[in-house]
Image (cartoon, rainbow, N blue to C red; front, side):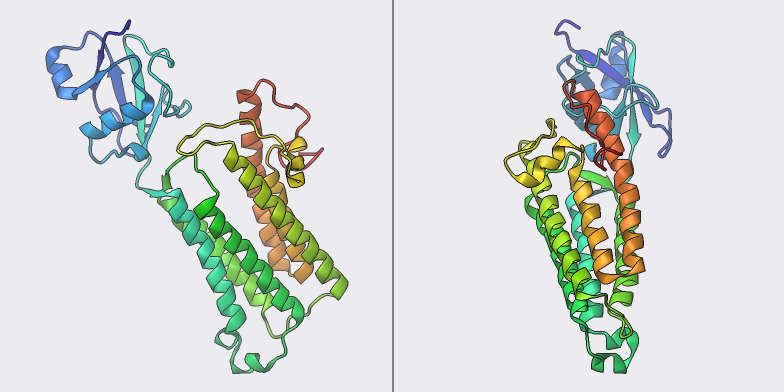
Length: 323
C-alpha cells in the first residue's frame, strides 16, 4: 500500500439476512470499476469510515446496520481498526452484513424499564382493576408496601442509570430486541405484581422481610457502584474498554473475585426480593435473570482474559470461587 490510495469494487453476492454483501479490494481495478464503486481507500482508513463509504453507495445500509468482517463467519471488526492494522492486501475481501432495522440502546432501555415501573405501580395502586371491587377494602400488609418501594427503587435506578451513567459500546441494536426485551420484563412484571398485590397474599415474618430488605438495598447500592466504576473506565464518546479493577468504593472490591460483579449484585437484589416477598414468580424471575446474566458474564470473562494479558486468573465470571 505504501500510502498509495487503493480502490474498492463492490459486487452484491448475498441477500439480506444471509452472511452479507462481499466487497473485494483489488488494486488492479479498472477505471470503470472504480467509478462504478465510487470508493477510494487509504491504508489508514478506519472501519468506521469504510461503513460511511458503504452507506454512500447504498443508502439503506446505514453505518449502524453494518457488521464488517474479514471472514464470512468471523468476528465483527471494531470501528477504530484501520485497513492497514487488519492486514488487508491486494485481493483481500471484506464482508458486510445487513443487521436490519436498528434502534438506539438508550431508547430500548428506557422503554423496557419504564414498563415494569408503571405496570407494577398500577396494579399496586389500583387493585380493583385486577381483583374486583372488593380488593380495595382488604387491608394491605406492610410487606406489600415495602415490595412496591423496592420495585420502584430498582427500576427508577435503572432509568436514571440509562440517562446519566451508562456509556454504550454500540449505538444501536436490532429493533426486534425492543419487542423481545419488553415482552420479558413486562410480562414478568405482571406475573409478579399480580401475586404480591393479591388480596390473599400472605406475607412472611418481619425478620425475614426486613433482613431481606437490608440485603436488597446493599445489592442495589453495590450494583450502582459497579456501574459507576465501569462508566469511569470508558472515556466519553469512545468504545475504549479498560481492565476493570476495584476502586476506593468498598462495593467494588467484588471485582477482585468476579469479572461481572454488577450481575452478581443484580442477582442478589432479586434473590433478596424473592425471599422478602416469599413469591414464587419473583424467584423464577431471579433464576431466569441469573441464567441470562451468566451467559453474558462468561462471554465477557473470556473476552477480558483474551484482551488483557495481565488479567487476574483467579477471578471467576459471576459467582465468587465457583463460576
